[in-house]
Amino acid sequence: MTHTNNAADEAGQDISPGWLREGLAAAAPIALGYFPLGMAMGVMGQKAGLSAGMVTLMSLLVYAGSAQFIAVAMLGTGAGPGAIILTTFVVNFRHLLMSFALSVPLRGARRGFLSLFSYGITDETFAVNMTRFRQGGWDRRRALVVNEGSHLAWISATTCGAWAGAFIPAGAFGIDYALVAMFLCLLVFQLQGRLYVLTALATAILAVTLYLFVPGNAYVVLASVGGATIGFLLQKRKNHTRRAS
Image 1 (cartoon, rainbow, N blue to C red):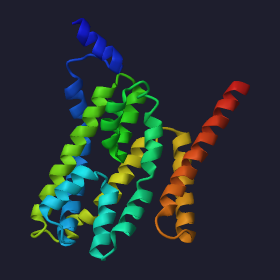
Image 2 (cartoon, rainbow, N blue to C red):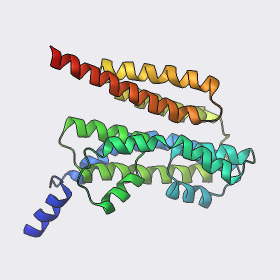
Image 3 (cartoon, one colour):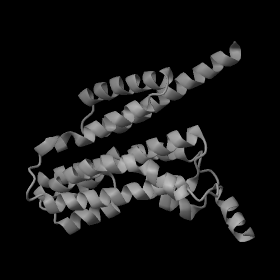
Image 4 (spheres, helix red, strand yellow):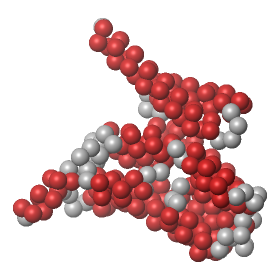
């Protein structure tokens, strides 16, 4: 019992028999959302000439929905490996910002845990885990279950989509809109106050403006960094006003 307690203390986790169940319950909505997205990705991969095994391997090693969609689309147009790698790197640079935010509740975790955990960070798992951490009663093991459970769902969905790709047209059932719908839901999920709404609006305006003048997908990263900076400044101003009053 002492050994178990020490292990839990080192990990900074709450020992609860329901941690696995609670983690899976939190991951369930993500898994449900991943199914149509993953199916769409699998269908697109099959249309681009990838086998089911290749799609599964991509989901296992890459595990980034937007990057996989972009990579498959670029493969379909005959783009080279260098262009695909650079583009997906730029688009997924936002993961650096998400990792910075998660470093606060994960402070003190060991490198091995952080390596495993960081591999499962997506926009969806980030949104769910950050919300749960803010609400309290959430720990690293539950957050890790959210990441890994979502990853398994994504792998399963993309594999099914690749197998079924021969029978499903790429644009059927609106599956080509699934990724956009998912990001819109995540945005609404995060709007928990005036500060968040203002930050989202400022980021949206910045993204559209940069899109008109910046070539490629660099506007995504620039808008993300700019929006985060605006949100930080707004929060800093709000805190200063509170102290002054």
